[in-house]
Image (cartoon, rainbow, N blue to C red):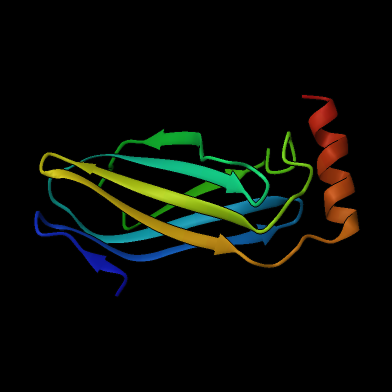
Length: 119
């Protein structure tokens, strides 16, 4: 188990994996008591601070998924990438981090760069 908060939210999984030229960020919960939002952040190895990716409202589902399709935009493919999940609750915030250690292949980096040019 990754963590249990005193006010009831329980995160049992938080991971980031490559899914083609995207990064699949998943987290799993067993309890969402008092959870107001989940905020997801990303930081490349060459960046000084985290960038906010999305805010997700709790929906009483067990597993949440975010597909990071902009991982190569503005980061120059400078992995490893660190993802931070901030669980905002009525009693305070709790942060979890996971590191995407694997380096994308040249094909993944190139395809990600090409796709970002057309967005």
